[in-house]
Image 1 (spheres, rainbow, N blue to C red):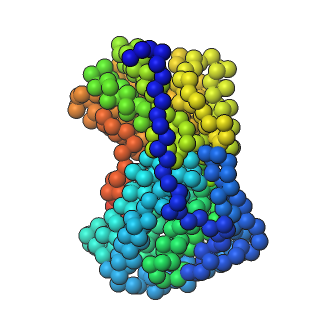
Image 2 (cartoon, rainbow, N blue to C red; image 1 turned 135 degrees about the vertical axis):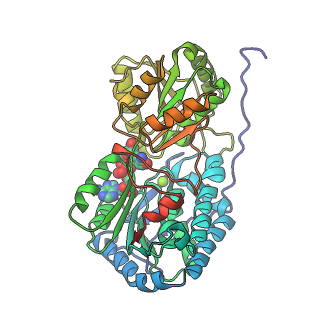
Length: 481
Ligand code: NAI
Ligand code: MG
C-alpha cells in the first residue's frame, strides 16, 4: 500500500426506524404512569449530536415517597408468592427484553453515546442474561444457601449510573426480585430512556403492581430515596464521592447497603505475554465504552524490556480506531456521555500536560457536533501524577514501566481504589501469585472486561463493598439465619 493512501470506511448506520421513543415520560409508580409532583420534566439528550430525544419527569420527595409506599404495599404478597411463580415473571422480563433487543440497543446508543456494536453485542445480551440467570435461582434459594433460612430484606432503593444504563438496571433488579424484595429504581439523569423502556416491558408482562417502580431525576431524587425511612436496602453504583455521602446518610440506621464505586485499575503486561493479544487487551481495557467503565484498565504497566515494542504497536493500533457516530457499526469509540463528562476529561488531559507527562493522540476526524474525545495515551508519568491517581472515566491511558514482580505489585496497589486488574503472562504460577497479592475485587488473566452473570463483581477500599452477580449477588438481597 502506498503510505500516503488513506483508507476510509463507508458508513454503516444502524436504522432507527423501528425505535419508539415517547415525547415525554412520566414516573412508573404502582404499575401506572404518573405525572411528577414537581410538574418538572427535563430533556434527555443524544450526546452524539446534541439533539433532544425526549423529556423525562423529575421526581421530588413526594414522588419518592409514593414510589416507596407502593413498593412497601407490594412487598407482603410478592415475598410470599411461590418462588417458582416469581421465577416466571423474571423469566418473562428476560424474554421480552430479548424480543426487543434491537430496539433497546438503539435507544441505549442514542441516549448514552456508546457504539451500537457494544450495546447490541454486550450491554443488551448481558442485561437479558442477568434476568435469565436470576430467574433460575428464584426457586432454588435453599440450594444457594444450604441449611439457612432465607428471607428478603424488603424495599430495595437502587440508584444507577449512566455508563451501562440497562445493564446496571438488570444487575440491580434481577437479584432483588429473585429473592422476594420489591424495588424503587432511579436511573442516571443523562440516560433514563432504557430504564423507562424496561418499565414498559415490566408493565407489558403484568408484574404485580408496585413490585418494581422506576422514577427518574437528578441527585436530589437519589438522595431522597436514600434518606427515605422506609427503605431496607440501598444498592448504589456511581462515583466514590456520592458513595461516601450515602454511607454517611445511613450510619445509625438499619439500612443495608452495597456500593459499587470508582476505580483506577492496573493492566499489567509481562515480557512473556502474547504481545498482539495484550495490545488488544489494552485497547479493550481502556477504550471500551469510551473509558466510561468503573473497572477500566486505566493504568498500564509494561515490563521495561518490551515497553518500546508494546508502545509502538499500541500507537499504531490507536491510529486504526474509528471515533465517531455511535450508530455506525464501524465505530470503535462513540460519544462521551455528556457535556459535563467531556469537560472533566478535558481538564484531566490538561492537568496531565501541565504536570509534564508526554501525550499521544492519533489524528482523527471528530464530528463537529456532539461530545467526542480522541483516544489518548500519557507516557513518562510518575506514581504521583494526578492522572495516575484519579479516576478520569474517559479514553485516557497512563503508561508506566516496571522491572520486577514486587515492583509492579507495589505500584499497582498504590491507589485508594481496588476494583479490578489485568495480568498478561504465559506463566500460570505468576497469575496465581498476582491474584493473591493485587488488592482488587476482580483480576482478569490474559483478557480484560469480561462479564458474566454467574461471576461476582465488586471492589475493595474506595471502590466500595458488596458483590453483584453470581451467588454473592443473591446474598446481598437476603437476610440469612
Ligand atoms: P454520580 O455518582 O453523581 O451519579 C451516579 C448516580 O447517583 C446518578 O443516578 C445520580 O443521579 C445519583 N446521585 C447523585 N448524587 C446523589 C446523592 N447525593 N444521593 C443519591 N444519589 C445521587 O456520578 P456523576 O456525577 O454522573 O459522574 C461524576 C464522576 O463520577 C465521573 O466523572 C466518574 O469519575 C464517576 N462515576 C463513576 C461511575 C462508576 O461506575 N464507577 C459511574 C458514574 C460516575
Ligand atoms: Mg442522554
